[in-house]
Length: 161
Image 1 (cartoon, rainbow, N blue to C red):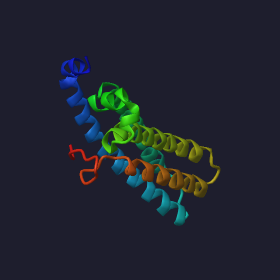
Image 2: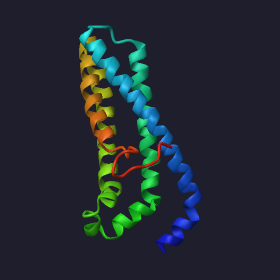
Image 3: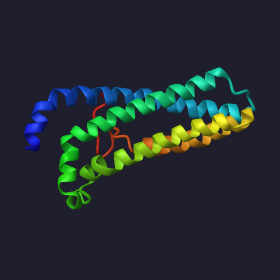
Image 4: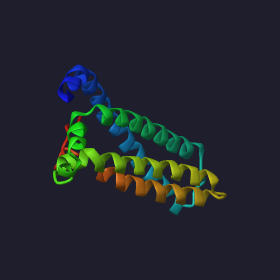
């Protein structure tokens, strides 16, 4: 039954997976820029500008869009179906555990941290506090997200695109 479901949605799954893979680079680039700019501005005691707001907003939007696409993939993925079919056995298999639990959980928490970082920065009363909060929250999110990306050189590798 699961195979029949996948055969019906396979072209859509492939297209959405490619979109998800491509959007990962938008999120990664914006995250690197946001973290670097936040630390440079924090230690350089610079003003929190409209550019800083735009970078964090674009990061937030792209991360949430990536999450929505990823959640859609999660519920139609044959790998996740296999992982959830026998959850106990899946926890012993690195591939199934990664796709069934680790990837989605890490990404949801990472995106929640990005969201919290933007909110906390907006609530800060000084420019230094805004940069500091964004730098710390975005760095934590970056570490978590980067650890859960299926990089081509990792054991759960996916193609670059």
